[in-house]
Structures are given as C-alpha cells and as structure tokens.
Length: 134
Image 1: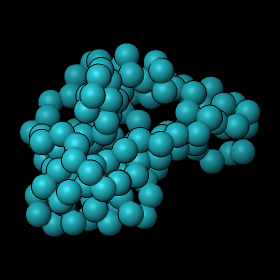
Image 2 (image 1 turned 120 degrees about the horizontal axis):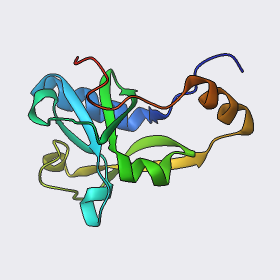
Image 3 (image 1 turned 60 degrees about the horizontal axis):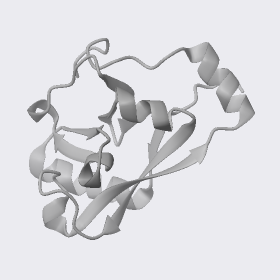
C-alpha cells in the first residue's frame, strides 16, 4: 500500500448535507471534542467561527472542509478510520445541521495492518496550530 491512508471520510448522505449547509453558510469546519452527550459528536461550524489550537488534531478534510478532533478524543480513536455519517434526529443546537432535523455521527472501523504500516510512515497528524489556515 503506497497511497496515504485517510483518517476521516464521509458517506454520500453526509456529503449531501455538507453541500446543503455550505450553500447556506459558506466555508465550514468540523470538530469533535469528546466528553459526554453531544461533545463526542462531530460538530459543524462556519469555518472561522471556531478557533483551533495545539490540542486539536487535524485529521483531514470531508467535502473539502477541515476536520479536527480534540487530542484526548484522538487518543481513543487513533486506531480507527472515521466515517462521518448523518442520521435523523436532533443533535447539538450549535452544530449547523441541527435546524435540518439531522445530526452528524461518527462511525468507525479498525485500520488494517497494511494501513497501520502506512500511518506509521506518515507520522502523527498535525495539530490545529501546525496546519496552515485555509
């Protein structure tokens, strides 16, 4: 396996919701912080309304928008590929999908041994302050 391993991807349904929200709000960003209740769900914000810092890990992009995870949460999820989905229901009132009657949800699968090898060569993901601003 020579291609980079993605740490986060998105389902077609979630991508359609991202496109809808993007049309209403412009550039977006996602953050999953950890904690109880909605804190462990991926949250969608206007790109410059949430300041990321050294404790936020950049995992990649979904639908062209950056996805970050809090360092403590990343410690739990680092061995899994994250798949962002959307489901009916009410999530946090602060996440942009909430008024649409849906919420983003993180599904996951454990990396294969080949993917673990590639991740090892890729090194650790950058933090929010290490990654150039978009």
